Length: 162
Image (cartoon, rainbow, N blue to C red; front, side, top):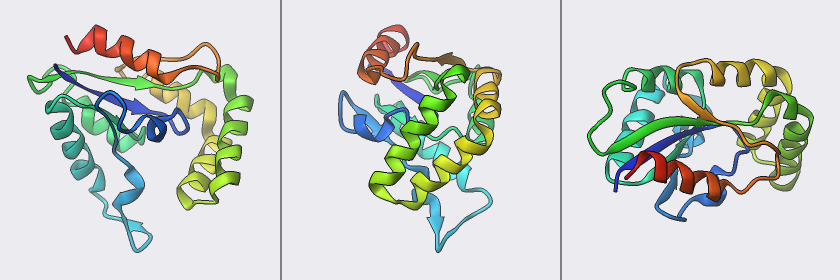
């Protein structure tokens, strides 16, 4: 079975699906050292994602611009055992519900990564979604914020990984 890379917007449920159906959440916040990231962190991050996906896993990655740009070079030349690189993100019209979702997540954890995600979405939600849906990758957007990510992953695997 081929692997798949899912570039996921913050709050889509990447962490909650880790371990299910060969899904791996490659957490980008682990690439901070002493509060800073190396300027080329995304190259190592993306190469790890490519390697894991090439082993037949579904790898959830962050949606940072650097990550998308790095993956873009592989769009027409994927490693042989990767079905595709796709994006999963909410719709522009879901802004209020999505920010509420990220606020609730931050309120529960008080983690720095969830705080950064909330601030980013609060400041640049429309811009983020536009960039994700206009950067050249196939993208999936749920009709509502109350969706089952498992159903989407099953459909993606069926479409791209057989």
